[in-house]
Image (tube, rainbow, N blue to C red; front, top):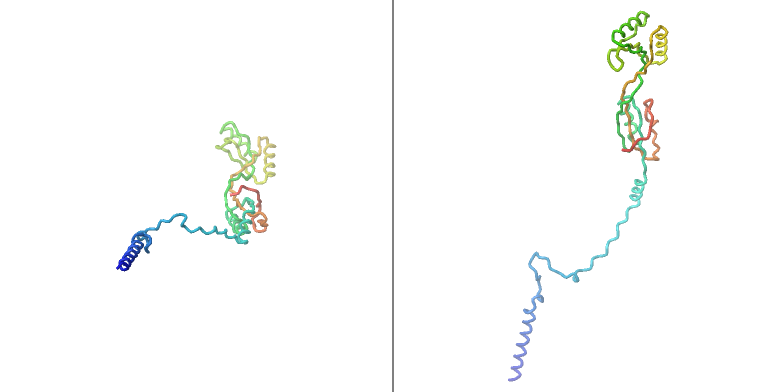
Length: 224
């Protein structure tokens, strides 16, 4: 009788221990303790160690050489001109396009001697200038013009010459006839066309063999 009672007690005790182990520890059961879709909280000490930092990828030798070459390249900036016409400028651009890093065209106004005047000194009034002109005509100087406006009014112009030697000869003839005469240079404002270029030093840049226009020169200019 006693042994039966002991056996029943031991069986009950085993059942109680098993129930406590199964139901009394919530994290002993399988499954996720968090709600679906919610990340599980973990201690820093529980996280896996991060992988060792990856070594930087080596730069290919060809690319490194290209970068070094670009950094070491120096440049020169030149102005070519003056070109007489816009077409001459366009022809130069086309001829040098393969040799220049950059190009730009520009126009400037320049003063150019266009001839020499033979003139008599200004008279005191318009009437005096007309009387002097009649006297010149009487001495067979017929290529004259009485200036009525501008910066030299009442002046008598005796013509314009391209050759200064011819202008001096005519002036001396007028003076020999007893009239006050002198020479004055005549200038006009004319457009000039220039081509600015940026070229790499050491590129054997030779513009003279490619440009056919006459009177073209080169000079250093600011880079752009």
